[in-house]
Structure formats: C-alpha cells, structure tokens
Length: 454
Image 1 (spheres, one colour):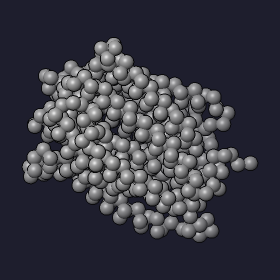
Image 2 (cartoon, helix red, strand yellow):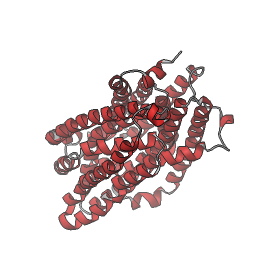
Image 3 (tube, helix red, strand yellow):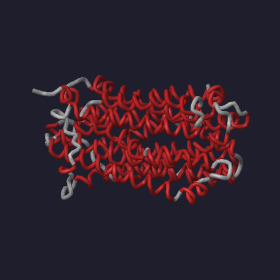
Image 4 (cartoon, one colour):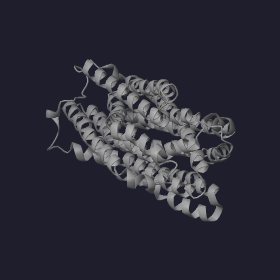
C-alpha cells in the first residue's frame, strides 16, 4: 500500500502536487524574509544609521550560513528524494546522517574562526570606527554563538521536505521567523540591548526552530528515513561526494553572494554610510521576490528528483512547466508591488532622509529583474534535483560573482553610486538567458514516458 507521500509524488494531479509542495515552502520563505527584515526594521526605529549600516555589513557573513545549510540541505534532499524514488531507504538514511553531523562540525568551526578574525575581517568588509563595535556584537551572537542552530534549522527543513513533508518543514521555518519578530522589539527596546538584542533574538529563534525539527524527527522515527545516529555515518560510501557536488552550486551562489555584497558595500562605503544603510534596506526588501523564487524551486525539488529517478519523465516535465508558470507570475506581481511602493516601504524602516532617498532608488533598480531570478533559480534547482553538477555550478557563478562584480566596477566608473546598483539586474538578466540556453536542450533530450525510457 502506498504512503500518502508516494501518492503525492506518483499519482496526484501535477498541479495539485506542485501547489501542495510549493505553497508551504513559499510561505515559510516569506516569513523567513520578514524575520530577516525585522532586525533592520526594529534597529531602524532606533534612528541610528550606523547600526542599520552595521547589519548590512554583517549580512554577507550571516548569509554564508545559508550557503552551508544549502550545501548539505539541498545536496542531501536531492539524494534522499532520488533514493526514495528507487526504493533505497537505507541510502536515504545514511545521507541524512552525513548531512546533519557534517554541517554541525563545519558551522561550529566557521563560527569560532569568524570571531577570532573579527579585528581583521570587519575593517576589510567596510566597518569603520562608527560601525565596528556594532558589527562585532552582531557577529558574536548570530554567528559565533548561533551558527549551528542557524544552519541546522534550514538544513533539517530541506531534509524533511525531501520526504514530502512540505507543510511540517515550512511550519518549522515559520516558527523561527514568528518568534524572532516577537523577540526583536523586546530585546531591543525594553531591555535596551539595541543591535545586540536583535542578534540575540535571531540566535534564540533559530535554536527554537532547530529543537522543533529534532522533536518532529524523533516523534516520527518509525516512518522517517532521517536519522541522528552517528554510527550510521557513511565513511566509505559515495554519499558525501554526491551530496557535496550537488549542493555545491547553492553554497557557491551564497558564497559568491557574500563576495558580491562585500564588494557592493566597499564601493558604496566610498560615498556614505547612508548609502550602505540604503542598500541594506533595499536588499532586505527585495528578498521578498527572491524568497518566492527560492520557495517555488525548493518546494518542487523532491517531486522532480523522485520522478526523474523513477523514469517518469512526462510527470517530471509537467511539474517543471507548472512550477515555471506559477513562479514567473508571482515574481512579476511582486516586482510591480516593490517598484510602485518603494518610497513608503523604505521610509517604514528608517526615518532618515538621505537613507530613504538612497533606499527607494536602489529598491526600484534591483527589483526589476525579479521574474528573471525566478527562471534562473528554478533552473538551478531542477538540475540539482536530478543530480547534475556542472550546469547549476555555471549558473550559480554567473548569477553571483561572475557577472555582477565586474559590472559593479564598470558601472561605478561610468555612473557612480547609482551605476554600482545597476550591476545586479544586468547580471540577473544575463544569467536567465544562460539558464534557458542550458535547460531547453536538457528537457528536449528526456524521453516522453517510461516506455520510451526503457
């Protein structure tokens, strides 16, 4: 007798299957964006542009934690869903053990290392005498102390989703987000901890979400393939190689995103702290479009991977087409909203005239290629879901680092501060073109159905 997850992956109407997997993931991503914006919003209410700028300067280092979560989470969920598609539950369980314990070790080392090199690193990313201490406090709580729960929270959501439990995964992510929104104003204002309070709230929220996932997995231990038992760690299997190579493009995109944001902040630092604060607000707001695209792509990943490994290529192709339509439509609507409402949105974060002027201009510039991002992200995830390594790596490098950093320097020379920000939409558009060039031939080569595959 088939489980309800097997029915979802194999028999349910494609549109319903996609929606049931995607909607909870998109909602959780949106809540995650809101709670990421909460730090900037509540710190902005203090009225100090230096503290808002400090959050912006620290964000690349915090984003790298998402890269680590994606390295093990997306790589692991792809292999788990493909293993389940071929009925290999033992391999799926070993994959989960590898991902969990490896990510704990790596994130712990990252947090310790980052705190040790703060005196060198923070000035290198743009911190000055006015922002250094704020940056140090934020890094200590969110990364030195909070690295492990931040990575595990996101990674376990990926692994749980690989079995078809999209709603449970999304609830865990949403739990951390809602808790952060509640704790932020408490720690910042009544306790008078300001930026340190926002960082503590973020750390505690991620820890709570991690505990939720641990309890969920323990409660369903008789049905789930996800295991915590370190004795199952696959030292001599091909699992580590498969997980890391498939997850690497997502990690690479986050890593290059860190480099891209550092470059952006360093170039903007040559103009003013208000410009840095403005781009910090604009990027936080623009994460709404990116969250929709990410939620769509991550939500449908198990469905694509399962049917690909089961040689049900017709269903796989149908799921992709449906996902592209949904993702593009919602991203386009989000872009229109962010462009037309840029002024009021940015002003809600901080009441500083110069920061608002920069922020609304930057938001209008970087939001215009939201639909392009939706296509690129879904293409990257599609290749990852079937175990491809080269194509997602190429697209990840093009989208972040490969194109936008050279354009930042070029546009800075040509158009100054406004030109720096234009590098982002230019890179996103070119990355979308490359994504379509790689995806269309791949889909055309797939057989139409199981008989054709045989």
